Amino acid sequence: MLAKLRGFGAFWYDFVIGDDWRVAVGVIAALAVTYAIARSTPSVWWILPVAVVLLLPMSLWRATRRS
Amino acid sequence: MNSGALFLAVFLACVVEAVEATTIVLAAGTSRDWRSAISGVLAGLIVLAAIIAALGPALSTIPLQPLRLVVGGLLLVFGLQWLRKAILRASGYKALHDEEKIFATELAAAQAAERRTSAWVGDWYAFTLSFKGVLLEGLEVAFIALTFGSNQHDVGLAAVAAVAAVVVVVAAGVAVRAPLARVPENSMKFVVGVMLASFGTFWGAEGAGAHWPGSDAALLGLVPSIAVFGLLLAALLRRRHGRVTAPAAYATAEVA
Image (cartoon, rainbow over all chains, first blue to last red; front, side, top):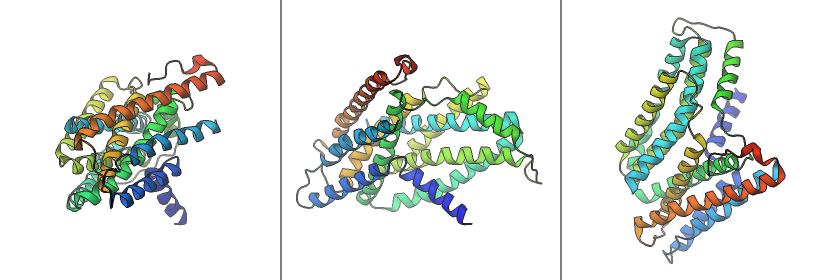
């Protein structure tokens, strides 16, 4: 039973988070910062593109460093 | 732009996953029992349809801004995962998806497995293999189709794109009667990754309360920018990988 629950959890972790959990954490952080700043100024559209520019190379760098 | 992008993203994502599911079903049917394999496909499709039927109306009741915040975030995480994999494959750091090799592995495993029957299913192994293949590969596509469709208020178009992709892949699979090894899976994965990351960025920022300059027209800049950025990263990594290993090994990487 425990193994099945663990397998179920592992499937959803892999489905939503994927190979690099730091990417998911980075996206959530960028959304939170956008949400917080957008309360006072709505022209904060650039935060998520900057997050993409930072997160993707960092994730690739970690993956290629291992191989 | 948005309807075309919606159709393209769902269609390509569905083709990629359908090719992978077809390989698994072909292995189950060829090595074990076609009737059980097809029963597994039908059962998988029924469960997928039930999930879509349950989630689709639920998604349409959520107000647009919170929906875009959550869905945008998820699509961005998904998109970055797809892009990451496609770039690693294009640059040679990860092996390209080889449907013939996967087919051979699945075939060997299926031939070695014991045969168990029941009143409903002739061969449980073939049924389960097909069922899991269809359900697991289809879940991601269902999520993409539902979220894209509900955000664009056009779930019908997303469904048409998904069904069209499945029809094309199944027709090709039946015609060839072999794993669809020539489908440029990595290039399609790259395009889907770009679409998911672009729309995820756009909707996520909007859902968080930001306003894009030019409103929807901002996507016209966002999609090509992320595509060029991804191609640049792939080229940089390919050059770096070429310096470390023999350059000929991945000279035929799909994303140019």
